[in-house]
Image (cartoon, rainbow, N blue to C red; front, side, top):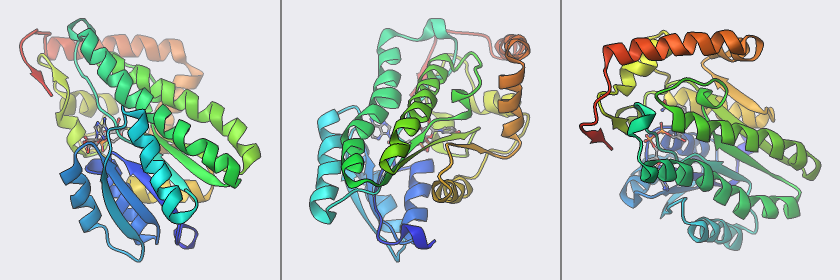
Length: 280
Ligand SMILES: NC(=O)c1ccc[n+]([C@@H]2O[C@H](COP(=O)([O-])OP(=O)(O)OC[C@H]3O[C@@H](n4cnc5c(N)ncnc54)[C@H](O)[C@@H]3O)[C@@H](O)[C@H]2O)c1
């Protein structure tokens, strides 16, 4: 991909899953990438496995720390004179009945999934406006376009990211800056085994919810993301059949609510709520 050659990029949450796939795809397309993650060793692994013509280096960055995100952006600008791409991708999830969610857990998902993205935007967007170029890519989710319970706090954060991205995009266009929100359904990454509360089974939940036993491939999503940036698209919905869910959510929101109520009831019957055990 010609347009990524020499581009200066930061990917947050690059130590695993979608972020790691994005970093590998960018480096393969010729970009110089900072693989940022709260898990420094995981970031190092991604940087090592990313093969050129571009370059990769690792940085331990906690996206909930605004100063750390600002420092990562400043470092790229100091080295290269600009920043072309920021992927605000780091995220966490909580799955299970919302009455089990502690205030600490609510705050943690707001801090990572919303504030983490805000910190990336606040640090990189003013630089991009001054440059008159750049692209902000926020990893939202299909959960940002359609709502279902038992992942309620996650849905809340991803709706916020879709709103932020679509609104910012209308301002950014006048400055030559692009904004894209990625909205995949379940992708085969370690997040599917994290953040389960009580008897919640994330894999089973997404399997039934999306009507498929197979989860989407992160490398495929990364390749589609790069193509969506090149086309300056507003949203990337993946896989293709997920467009139907999105369309359904927009055309018949009341019916989708009723279906979601039935879906949650069925899920709860299969996996009754229990206060025992939280898998983090
Ligand atoms: N996998 C899916 O099914 C799916 C679907 C839609 C959207 N998403 C979103 O994709 C993004 C990436 O998720 P993934 O599936 O690759 O999960 P993952 O768990 O494989 O990777 C998430 C990465 O983010 C890092 N991270 C967590 N908190 C951090 C913090 N405070 N600062 C910096 N890094 C932090 C983790 O260390 C990890 O390396 C998330 O925003 C997630 O919500 C995932």
